[in-house]
Figure 1 (cartoon, protein in one colour):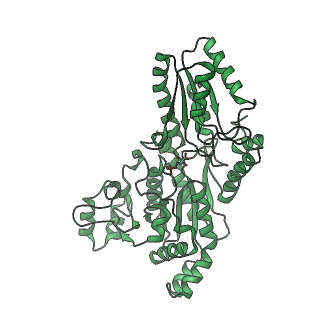
Figure 2 (tube, rainbow, N blue to C red):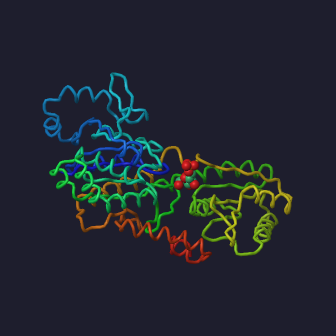
Amino acid sequence: RMKLAVLTSGGDSAGMNAVVRAVVKTGIIRGCETWIVREGYEGLVRGNTQVHAIHPEPPTVPAAVKHAHGGQASNLLSNLRFGDGDLLRDGTGDHPGGRSLKGRYIVRVGWDDVRGWFAEGGTLIGTARSAVFRTTEGRLAAANNMIKEGIDALVVCGGDGSLSGADVFRSEWPKLVAELRSQGKITEEQAAKHGHLKIVGLVGSIDNDMSMTDLTIGAPTALHRICEAIDNINSTAASHSRAFVLEVMGRHCGWLALLAGVSSGADFIFIPERPPEANPWEDEMCAEIQRHREIGKRKTIVIVAEGAHDANLQPIRADYVKDVLTERLGLDTRVTTLGHTQRGGRPCAFDRILPTLQGEEAVKALLEATPETPSYMIGVRENKITRVPLMEAVAMTRAVAEAIAAKDFAKAMSLRDPEFHQ
Ligand code: F6P
């Protein structure tokens, strides 16, 4: 019986809870034992497990529930008091009645623990950018914690850094097991049983910056949030005939900025993959905005991706763009930085559907994994859920950054998404 754990890592994104829900429920349906790891890789290192599972079998199979709980019926009943995903939902893991998850990071979960998790923003199981997992000692502790519980499969939902961390963990696994055995922390039997770690990655990131997939989980919601903000700004901008410069997230990726501009009819957009061609770019921007004003537009919207720069890789800052618009065109200009309002809040419908389909595929991929198969990343291409070798996707994503650093912007655009960026 496969024992699988799911964790979320890196910056949170809407839809991560739907991932956890889908992985847990699919795992249960397919006969796996299901666990969550709180606080990302940090929790894997800290360990201290808690056996807590509400309906570790699908509730539609009552006989199985009975069997699974054996003599622990009263335990099951008391668990039900905390049903509907509540134990994990409040973020502290503390509940009346003395049941607490404080200090416990690896938690066995069941069907009802993840009930209703579709609609929740962020990640209820917590996330972290773990420094300790980047050390061999940290990964050794993580491996030990997993082996102690017999966990042999891991689903990681995060960005490219988190997913490559997962692949390092997997390739190093036999060495970690041998070391734990030589330190006497695990038995010969445990070492033999855990010769191979199964890993699958799901991309949770608002930035949509991963290659070899059309969309990352959380990007549609963040984009929607930006569009709503622009709709709000439009009315006040038009009332005063003002210009607004909006800085949006995306790290080194211009997807949010570009698509928000397309969805809201922005006048000018700055993205890292394709800096303005004219030198100086200020002339090009002002000419374009002037033209829009002359044909009757009462408002101006300029979107600046947070990673935007000019052709010489000098950052383009929203405040500077504001100064240019004010001084050269005499526009009454304001800057709005949307910040983390783009990242938080309830997922849109697509950020519930995509993680559900991908979470199911992730469990299937784990069940089919062999020592020879690569670690897979679950993606989506032309509306089909896909499996691609994780490290190929990470390498291609890194190649975009390298192309930008080498000022080969045409290559950066084509690597990002050949069809969309034509
Ligand atoms: O990767 C997601 C993201 O929101 C980026 O768009 C942004 O650059 C970064 O994370 C912000 O990180 P933090 O929440 O740590 O400030």
